[in-house]
Amino acid sequence: MKSAFATHAASCHHQSTSPLTPNQLEAQIEEVKHVCQSQGLRFTSLREKVYRLILLAQQPIGAYELLNQLQSSSDKVIAPPTVYRSLDFLLAHGLIHQLNSSKAFFACSQPNDRHVAAFLVCKCCGDVQEFSHQPIQTMLEQVAHASMFNIQSSMIELSGFCHRC
Image: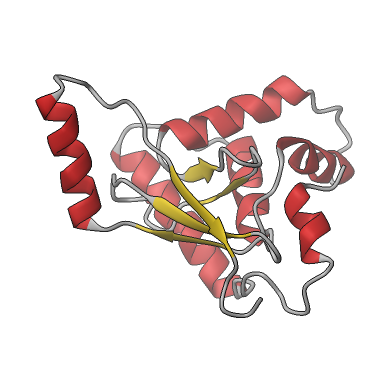
């Protein structure tokens, strides 16, 4: 099943994101392994495979797309809950994000830094740009503090069209 992003991307004339070079890919995986190790977390081979596929994706990728890719490269049957457990781990530790609008996953641009992230999502090509901005984080913390509210998660998604579309 193609994601909404894949369907929209077919009408655009450019690649949504630049693919990582093999060196960049391995450096990103090593960084995440280090982050996990420093926090006493297990970065299992399945978690690494799921993370690698997310990094290799040209746009946010859905859980069933990940499952299909994992299944095609394995002799074993991989059940959906197995993939979801890996995704839950990666999400819980800030290594990936999930867009509310599409439920698709993509790698965090700052996996070693807890931050309030916002996302610019192109409705045409599916490109997602992550940014964090200290004044936004400060404002959200001030509002939460004034309301005696404990923020557990936040997601700011702005949809529109990128400069190429």
